[in-house]
Image (spheres, rainbow, N blue to C red):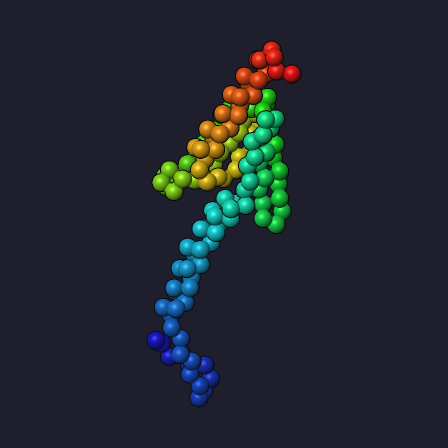
Length: 130
């Protein structure tokens, strides 16, 4: 501890280690919260007609691509992504439009979208499908 004079006859006891610990905690907590909140507030729906990406905590954003317009699905993961099972999934639509969201289990999500796309393509090519 350090004694710091405040006034003529008063002294204030200050612990720099507590200030450093608080600053370190804040430096660690902010990036973790910044990464975690979008993942926790993201909803991804894959229906027989579209892929809907809904994100946001206070302000919600809805992004939608019709299945017939989906050209590809890309998954990007940082070095810890495969270990912690998170990453960014990008749905690429016709004309180069892209919709990206951070997601937990992005590989599993990509496979789910591929299964729906395959079923959609089979139904579209099936002459008995009305």
